[in-house]
Image (cartoon, rainbow, N blue to C red; front, side):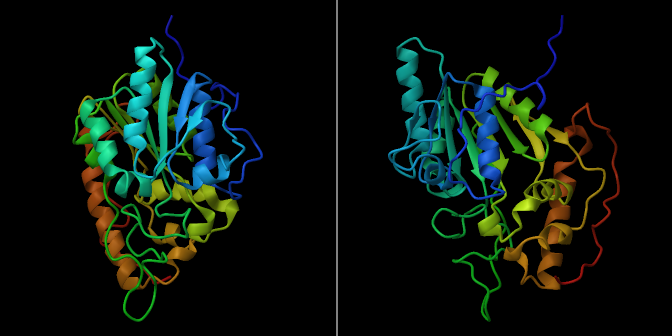
Length: 320
């Protein structure tokens, strides 16, 4: 008998991140972490560096985690989870070890420790909860911050108009080290989310999950539109859903057509200043990425195949 794949309806419902923590209303990060830990279950050890997660879930002397939890320096996620895993293995235990770090602690400050754990193929799960800036310390830009976005270190004024470089491709960086498994996830695609966490849980070696987690305060958005933003990010090409297993890349969801990126930008205050020229620059970059990412050979067999003309490539946009 073939066992049915877990879905959002059949996933475990026991929270490992208790209610009553201090996350902002509409926080995508808390939703993502809670569902990851539900699937991993109670036999799990969590490490988190300096981040929003650490602040809202584990301010001394209390903790919202129902599983063992540890933290140390900002840059140490890859090193600490490798050490915990080695210690548990020495004791003959099969406990899941997960490090949950933000984009600042993954793309930038924690990249060296992450690279070491990946190169050694340590038996750990690394989860990057990506809200595209250093939100915990007041919204400074990170390597994940998208083109044009306002942050306190990419201000808007007469000399500059937000961040002038594009988002780092962290999945490419990780996959380049031949890891066991790497995948992108979205809270707006729950069954895809659950499937990838369950797959990572069942594997051994270094696994990397990259989750987009909209941030109401840093993105200057209405808490009610968090899921809409997560969905639009995928439909506009600002985020893509795919997995890399044994060196093979598979797209797990391909939008039927590419929506204008303006649909996504106009819901966020961090992009309110963007000119027509900057929007067109971002759109062209996204169209190029879209063509590269959604090559027919990379699309999952579970999804419709075939090349479709992009709705937005080459079209003009209006300023916000």
